[in-house]
Amino acid sequence: MNKPQVGSIAPNFALVASNGRQVSLEHYYGRKNVVLYFYPKDDTEGCIKEACGFREVMDDLFESDTVVLGISPDNLHSHQRFVAKYYLPFLLLCDSETNVSRQYGIWGEKLVYGKKTMGICRTTFIVNKEGKIAKIFEKVKPAEHAKEVLSYIKTLNRLTVAV
Image (tube, rainbow, N blue to C red):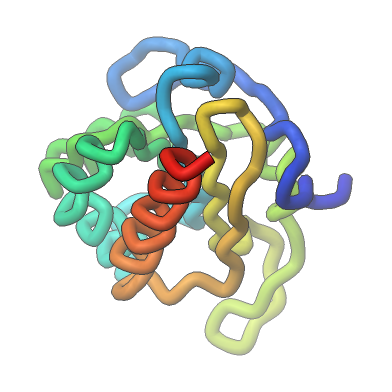
């Protein structure tokens, strides 16, 4: 499946979250912007940097009517350990069957330490309150990404207020 494009309605889904409850994207429509970030694996170097980066900017994102949802193929127990270990104040969603990753077009072949493998290509989608994809971040640099996302969210909110 092709990756959804900026301006299109974000594909809805329902996945089990790190709190044990099911979360659907449409739950946030009309209420919150959503930072939907796909990452390869809990508790690995790049994923720790990315998750902790989002943790550090959560107050600013919260003030901007924005929630963060992380998605990886890891299971509930793995997500719960990752959240507890790094005090993550947002939900991680279990895409164990990779259906949502495929729906968003970010599951595919990639190079990891010079070896070809199948997996999530680290990508973030910003979904606005209307449920449309406002921005797609590809080839994410984990250590810098959260600040880049926050900067975009602040711009998005200024544009929304101006309209």
